[in-house]
Amino acid sequence: MPAEKFDYVIVGSGSAGGAIAARLSEDPSVSVLLLEAGGEDDADEIKIPAAFPALFKTKWDWSYQTVGQKTLNGRRADWPRMKALGGCSSMNAMIYIRGNPADYDEWRDAYGATGWGYDDVLPYFRKAEGNTRLSDEYHGTDGPLHVEDRRYTHELSHAWVESSVDSGIKRNDDFNGAEQEGVGLYQVTCKKGRRWSVADAYIRPAMTRKNLTVRTNSFATKILLEGNRAVGIAYRQGGQDKTAHADAEVIISGGAVNSPQLLMLSGIGPGAHLREFDIDVAVESPGVGQNLQDHPAAGLLLYTKGTTDLAQFQTVGSLLKWKVSGRGPLVSNIGEAGAFFKSREELAAPDLQIHMAPSGFYDNGFREPVRHSVTIATTLVNVQSRGSLKLRSADPTWHPEIDPAYFEDQADLDAMIAGYRRAIETVGADPIARFIAAPWIPASLNPTDGEIVAAIGQLAQTLYHPVGTCSMGTADDSVVDPELKVNGVEGLRVADASVMPRVPRGNTNAPTIMIGEKAADLIKGAS
Image (cartoon, rainbow, N blue to C red; front, side, top):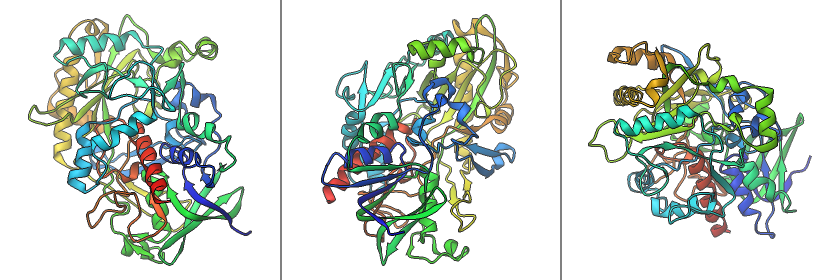
């Protein structure tokens, strides 16, 4: 079958790829192909905010697992990643967080990512954002990504915020404004109580354009190279092998797992590793698959009394209320409230985040709580440990070997212990204290460090924020330059969370959309 020709071929319809496809196709003179390995985002569980855990380990999930983690008692951690239009923006907890301004200045100053300092990226956050409450120098109100105050918040979330303020954490009604530190309720990427993904915000509106072609169930298997130039993509659709030629550029937006895997399968990566699988080395790039970072989270679990649990609202009545009005308990994003704070006062920026859920949420929500409970999940957001991603086969259908190296740097474990202790302080005062029946894990509200470490080993999981495996910068092991061009290859860029040289302090969906917005401008400037 002859190759189809487009100006741009984009692999991956997630938070960055979907934004890039929409922005490039604004120019009617160019043709754009967007390839997505999964299907349409047409399940109710995608649209219902509280239902996202029901997507895990289904046809919607890549169902990745890490290698056994020493600090997690040897456990392999599940890594849910969405396989459908919109990518992980169609599966995440919808929390709208950008990270700390210091994160982007560090990208620029420590890694050589010129043009990615906070002042550089803030206009792209604002361009993407359509916030229904906040309108100032930090926020946009007319961008495609709808951001709103959640239309349902459980009484436990309100109570925990008030108790956290009483415990000494200052109130913060805008984690993305002048200051990140503090406690409050999260804003969400929803519209009138329904998930508002990149598919909703960017892709579907753009699909009315004749110059944008979107192909679902199209699994990219290789980047096609002629010499040192990327000229297209080989992909599989409906059992057929196909190719698409890119006259201008190929853009890889598969995320922190799929993007480095596709580069390596195409001969771009650490040469010795590729030769293990008889892959011809086209470009020696030792950083591909290295620098893997993720936010680990581990919950303080407590039994509750005199209140409800989100899990009890999985009913037909709640579903009908959501369908009719976009209101009720199913509008909850589960992680309703949170905080940012420092494990040590001398730190320049917060290194810890809390995700508070009015239910016993752990093990990715696979285990249904047997009693009413609440989760105060400490999350490490300034991660020192570095892991890696490697091939396990030259067959693109094989999952790669994923090792996030959770807590292998002792500083990470020390910070988490401090985070647990701060979380315990937040539940010691009313109004939340009156709802606490007993500690669950740890079994004491005055645990030893050893008991906290044991709880982390038992409960720690991904917060779904892998980054860094195609790191951007000017170092010898940088995979892409500050314009996101793959070093050593012409006509090829990577644009997604994998290019982040360091994981931001906070949830990564909004930063990845920002990367997509900025990447589109970089690409347009080169055309």
